[in-house]
Image 1 (cartoon, rainbow, N blue to C red):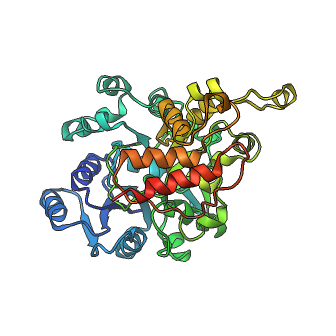
Image 2: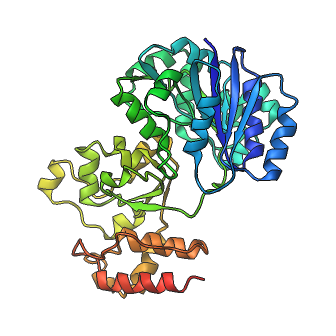
Image 3: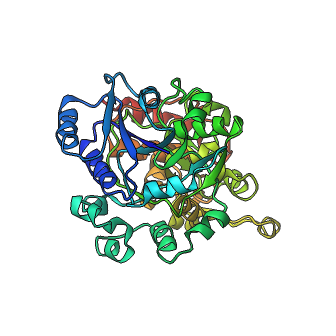
Length: 413
């Protein structure tokens, strides 16, 4: 069985070269690589071509002009160009372990696709991963990586499990939802063709999950190799467009044609999000799964100082006022970068909204106004609002928030 490794990339030749270095170090040699380039500029293409010409593994290259995000189209071209009967999809910022292909080959089954994952590294650690570290397999050695800097807690679980031989057990027992992850998933070529390949109508974000949903609908069931086939994701700046930010629980119908979500803002003290967490399996929803990053809108210090405690009956039912630890844990479990808005931003918003000290336990700045103030003050990007009706919970000063947000947006260049 020949495997075709399809690597997506865009203007990230330095990362792509590191990924190719990882494939040159594979113990399994019966494979080809197809680089699917969504319109990288000349400088990046020339840098890639210089390195690829010296590789001892078969590498093909498909490219089309940069006309916006068309990753799905170039992936489909790569599928057509592939010679293998089995397809492994990954990204140009993911470094594979030397037995990465062996794990995919040994776990491949008819009627199944393989659902893997990537272990994210922080930016400062990612910058220290070079060719020598990749050739020596250091990104997969916990003690060596600890010397390079701070690591996400999930790194120790994902890397340590295989190092002590319990990866196969965790792959069977851990209840993390199995999705098609574009950084580490594989399927039979005939199945990918049968469902029509990737959806070229979709924008940035979630295109891999949607591909997996259609595989499932076609009868192809997932098989988890999260802890067996390991790769590390090098953190880097994103090239695509301005950020798309969504809040809390947007209708899942919004995700049929455009699943892009750069930042998902979650009100980590709100009752409706607590219900989503406890009862609705929100963390496994397409809304959460398609998000690149999670942003918690209320700092724990703010929650302790201003948010009311639940009444005794609500507390007995499981209601809490601060769900920050739970959201942090869930974000880590799903390998999603997570951050919290600073406490002083809340105080600044209260001042701008003219919420008096005596009113701070009754009136609350919304997630929307806090996030938009943060974005405006942190960048020069143009901000457009869609679906904001400035109405809802009675404890927000909606009229004042509307005036403040419009003022903030209009003062941008």
